[in-house]
Length: 149
Image (cartoon, rainbow, N blue to C red; front, side, top):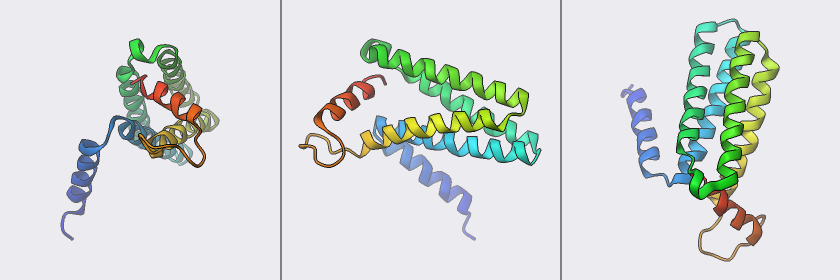
């Protein structure tokens, strides 16, 4: 094999370096969801060290998302996202302490819902008249949400 691990890391690094801000947010959500699944699986299989590592990655991602919020431009949306991220971080800790898979599922569902919204915003054409599932109102809301970062 040709060192596939380093090839994957280079690919990921290139993705991050070339992504727009909304694309980076989408990547954060995808990575957080992936690690919540890993934490869930490891909790069920009682592999606590691996679970702990996955939880720490999710907590780190939530921290980055919180630190990236622009409260001046994002206003109420940024404050609401900050509250959601804080709630999720607290619930993850609670789920970990209680060994409660349902709490992990709750956080995963929240991340998936928010992540799908960001994906929709990132896939919308920029500067073009909207057709399809997003209305002009949705795009305006998307622009306001994106302003939170």
